[in-house]
Image (cartoon, rainbow, N blue to C red; front, side, top):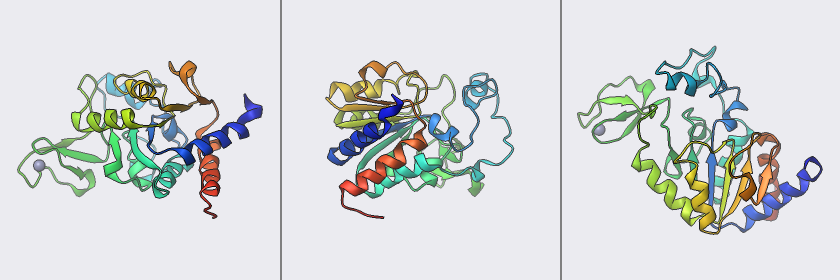
Length: 235
Ligand SMILES: [Zn+2]
């Protein structure tokens, strides 16, 4: 596998170049490369959430965590007009922090830095210190708790774009949690090419048209660079 990494990156760049409806799907794996804790480890965010415990205090604040080259590559795809939609399982705000337009993003599990109005659904920054929305509704954490259903507002466009996609790229997710894991299936049914960039195994590995077990940071930035060359854009 390792020997043909360059070849696979070239293929990915060509597919990005040809794609008309690119959908990217990200999971915790993209953020561990930013130094975020392992979400499924013994003290991981999700493990604690599942036990109804608050997130463990981090040695630094959430605000100090910066997007990495993986996040930035996805933002580059947006700038190049390639990204049609981004679906994320992450709550760390790093996609928005890296410049992804909120209209192109579904945060399936919410966002740690945002509060949501229980009445109108509007999202506001937690740092604003507000407790009530302008509409009079109460502001609560936007993070979707364990056992709570995902929100239609995020699910609907995610499924729609998955069905419309011709290229679906999974970045740093093991695709084990449904309904999120159903999205690549929708894309495959619609004839999309499926690309998986994840260091661990996924249930979709045998159906992927292109598979990277390498680090995200060793794949995506190079693929975007080659895409720019194909688009005759030079840095
Ligand atoms: Zn409201």
